Image (cartoon, rainbow, N blue to C red; front, side, top):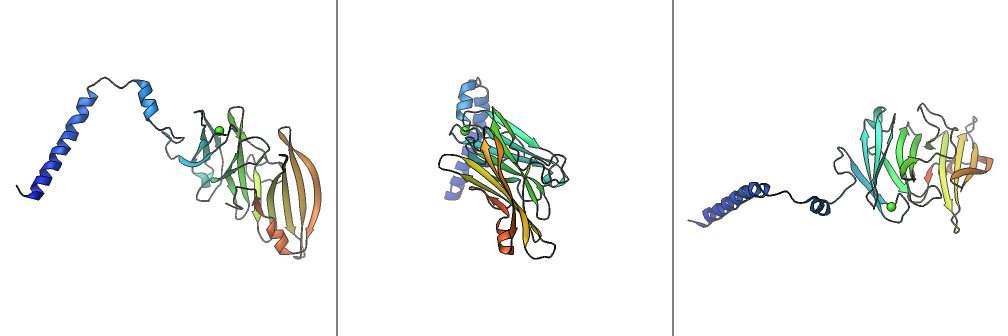
Length: 250
Ligand SMILES: [Ca+2]
């Protein structure tokens, strides 16, 4: 027997052994339940077709990292985007956005503190136009995932059947809209929504700056003022998300 034949023969024998062993194991009594649970790694997407794990962040505010997964179904054509969360303590939750119009590669935008409660918010693509983008901000309340309504609810309507609670940003020649968040050393959270419409003359932009404060579980208006921007640069600078931990645009 030359060397290569010997190796081949060894491989065949090993393979034969592997083939023989499983039926013998199967014939045994099944392992007790608890053993199976402790040896199987638990993942937010386990058993969910099309699910992608997108983040490990503290969603429920207990300072322990939770897993976040996303499943989308025809998101560009009025379909759905489902967000799954599995907490560090093993609780699973989900919420589904319906009638979405989202053309970006992924519906996942990011996770960051937005309101003034413990835990991060999950920011998900919802409606996308040529440049106007609307997001659904998901937050944890009392064991459930719910929508954190934009403080400017109702101001920016779109064709969506339920557009009023979405968070909108825009960056274009004629219209710019942005979201700013600040948190003071004392933990006071404010969100400022800025808009700028190009003047009919083409020169300069006018818009509003609205400041909201997170107070007792909701956004309360602090101030509203009309603003004029003389330069395009200043108007363009306000567009998009200006929230720590998030990109400016999808
Ligand atoms: Ca947690």
